[in-house]
Image (cartoon, rainbow, N blue to C red):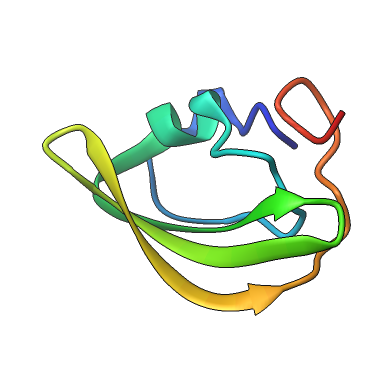
Length: 79
């Protein structure tokens, strides 16, 4: 899950339903310009749901709410 789905990219919207320590770089790359991505960011039991927007190739983040999701696994997931 942390690698996305490169063959079908770019995506206008991405929803990550497991907590990551940071935005997985492949997902940031696969998000279309002007796209939105929701990702719970943080450690195992303490995360913040963040909404990322891609503008001029850069992501900006807005904190939405404190949350607790299962850990993201895979190359860019929790260790």
